Amino acid sequence: METLLDALAEAVRLLASGDAETVEILLRSLRVSLAATAIACAVALPAAYGLAFGRFRGRGLLVATVNTGMGLPPVVVGLVVTVFLWRSGPLGELELLYTTTGMVIAQALIAAPLVCAFAVAALQGGVDPGLRLQLRGLGATRLRLALALLREARLGLCAAAMAGFGAALSEVGAAMMVGGNIAGETRVLTTGAVLATSRGDFALALALGLVLLIVAFAVTAMLTVLQQRAAPLRA
Amino acid sequence: MPARVGRAAAALLVIALVALAGACGGDDEKGELILATTTSTQDSGLLDELVPAFEADSGYTVKTVAVGTGQALELGEKGEADVLLVHAPTSEDELVATGTTGRRLLVMHNDFLLVGPAADPAGVQGQAAAAALAAIAEAGAPFVSRGDDSGTHKLELALWTQAGVEPDGGWYEESGQGMGATLQIADQKAAYTLVDRATYLASESRASSPILVEGDASLLNVYHVIEMTTRAGDRVNEDGARAFADFVVSAEAQALIGAFGVEEFGQQLFVPDAGKAEGALAPAA
Image (cartoon, rainbow over all chains, first blue to last red; front, side, top):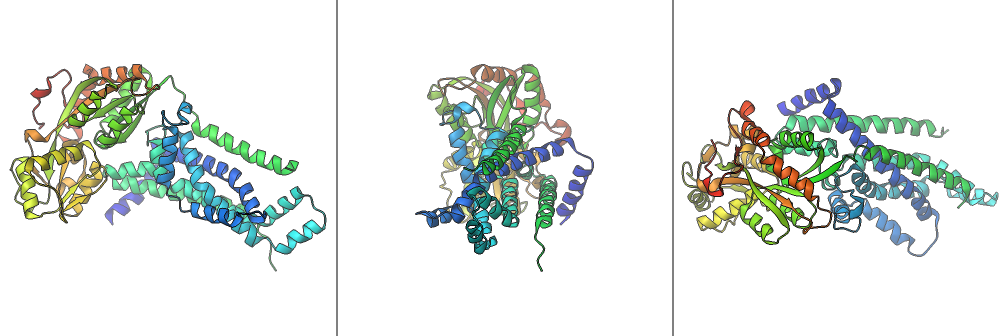
């Protein structure tokens, strides 16, 4: 209990004093996870559109695969990415192991199935099937149709992006393996917390966890405000 | 694909790339060096002193990967790391035998401690290390092992062999975690464990898990630096490895090692050994 109180005090102190190392780790966590989320969205949203409205063989199987992907253990993703990025691996020449770029790749792979699965659900559940028929009947081009449907499902799509961001920001397995938790280069909030724990500095570890929560709250709150502003008024 | 969807997708990609560029800024320094080392050097905080001093001296950027000694040796052999700072002499000999290494230099040592509950149910206090382990097995008293192929784990297994005991049964548990975490687990479970002095002194668990056996020659914890060469892999940075090895055995680094922890813990955590003969080491403290 005392440790928890210490941690709370430590978290407040770290944030209030603008502790240089904490701020650095915090900004790196944000940069890496936001970049990963952006890439995941860029890939997963078009894919989700195709999965939600496409009619092709194996669609059900693909959706099931994407849904399974939500349970991908970050440490396994991290290991696979690490093997690819090894100097002796297929992508070794890029020298991306133990860099934040490598971490972005791994986190994008973790976030993408989440974004995709939630987006498929949002598009299928949040869009009135009648709207689609109606728009087609009115002769909308495929592009206008797509934009209208994405717009209609924007609340759910926003939630999908937030889920992806949360997964990227909170995972530790891939960040540890691919990034290596190198001070000043690839240490992020989660890996910093692991190191503090193994050093027996529980207050610092918990404080970093609290900082992580505060940041996650700030980012998702912004997205939520945008989302709720966009929410249609229902009678 | 219709133009506006294309544009929207392009805009998303640009955002992603900008964020990505921001994320990987600052990675392109003069020369990069991957140091694979053990969790004990990181958890004790020694690397936080050595690595910045080396970077300032040499201009290299060091990527320190702190893993178990088993994994560190594996990374070296595959050419995934340029230089190793490790503490498992027998396994190091095996790596050297593969012909992929450069120099292997003695850096420092500290020692392992057998710690456990103050009540000492197996009565190991003051015994020789192997005899103490035999007594723990005999009593079936709980013992937490690293179980992670680390240098500490390797030494522990060698001690069990010496004690003539096959550690097995409900009393013997493997944490699979680093030294700091394993010590906490042992402390929480009122179990015995083997811990290096540096981690022990840096940990808060020492209040409730006193030292029961120390000073035995078989408990020496010897660290070597090993240079890897391009024989391990084409991309190994031989020059960087040489520079780092030269640094850790230099007078400057040896002084840092000798002074490390004295202020905080009131005693030396590592004994600098550069240039000494392998057989001439004595337990710390």
